[in-house]
Every structure is written in structure tokens, then in C-alpha cells.
Image 1 (spheres, rainbow, N blue to C red):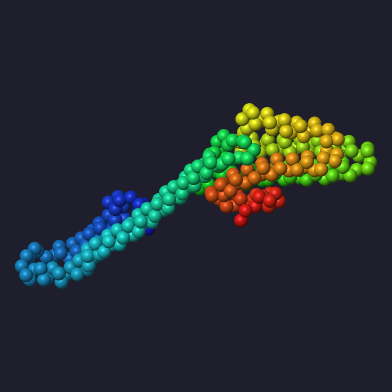
Image 2: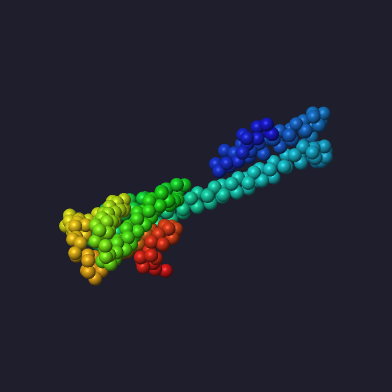
Length: 285
């Protein structure tokens, strides 16, 4: 039995397919015969009262062994029932976990479908956004840190470019050295381009697009900002800075809506972007 113990492991299959159950019945029976036959062989069959009494007297050990069969079988049956119950609990938990994941997934898709983005853009595929931020493993959704770090890098670049534009416009307006103005203007031009490129990249990554008319307006806005003449910035009372800041804040405000909904699946998504939202005044407790 010890050498072949691996053959007698209990599984979640039905009791009649458990080798250990049959062993618990068969071994006591054969042991009963093994210890009884050498004793009984010297006696003839006597079905009288005295015969039964004498049989019980000489067969105490074999009968005790035989009586152990139902006890051992009951022990195996109870252990088997415990294993089956544990298996059912595991399967139920697994099913509940899967149901919870898909429930969150479907609810998140539904919420994303109701978003109205302020800049007029449209989300092309709601489930694609979820699968961009999360991946399935062991019937659960796990965060893709790589995409979060990638987007955070792009947002930090946009904010940095916006802040530099504000500084450069102020420097241009306050500059007394005429030869410094073209250098500052080149920096403004570069930062506006960086904002536009990163802005479009994030939208493309999230599957957020403009229709043809709004796309044309977007291109005109940035083309106008890039080609704006120096005299329009000088003394414009901060209108250019305000225009760029408003455009970026609208975009981040829209992005926060998406992140808030994705946080239904995992709150850590929102935590990763909190700094961006706090800096731009979009944080809500």
C-alpha cells in the first residue's frame, strides 16, 4: 500500500471510482478470511445454538477485522465528500470571480459609451480602451503599467511644454534685447508642436478621433498657433497663453473622465494619474 500510495489518492470523482474506497472494503474482508480460515478449517459446520456460540467465540479477531470495513469505508466517504465540497467551493469562487470581472468590464464599457468629450472627439472602441489599460490573467484583470507610464510621460511633456510657452511668451513681452526674441520664438514654436504631437499621439493610442470637420478645426487651431505672428503675442494680454492652457485643460478634463470610469475596475489607475489631475485642477475627492 505504501509503495503504491499514489494510486490511492482521493479525487473529486464519484465515490465508486475511488480505489481507496474499494480497498477499505476489500482488505478487511480478505483479512477476515485470512485470519478466520485457519481457525475454522478444523471445525465442521454446526448451525445449532451451540454451534453459533462456539463460532463467535473462536472468531472474535476475524469478526472485529470484518466490522472495521464499514468504518473505514465511512471514513473514506467523509474524506471524499470534503474533497468534493472543497472542489465545488473553488469552482464556485472561480466562476464568481469571472462573473465579477465580466460584470465590471461590461459596466465600464457602458459607462464609457455615455461619455461626452468636451473637445468633440469620439471614442471609437470602448472595450479597446479597457484592454489597453488591463490584461486578462487567471480570470482577473491586471493593470498594464507600461501603457500608464507611457501616457504619464506624454502628459508630463505636454504640461512641461505648456509651462515653457507661458514663460517664453512672458520673456518675449518683457525682453529688452531684440536679438533674444527669435530664440524665444523658436522655443514657443517647438513647444506648440510638441503639445500637438503628444496630444494626437494620446488620442490615437486611446482610439479617440475627431470627425472630419472637427479635425479640420483642430489642425487650423494649431496651425494658427504655430504661424501666429510675433506682434500678436507681444502685448496680447495673455490671450495666447490662456487659449493654449484652456485647450490642454479641456483635453485633460476629458481624459480624467475616462480614468475615473476605468477606476471602477482598479482604483490604482486613478491613483497613478492623480498628480496630473491635481496640477491641472481636475482632482475630485
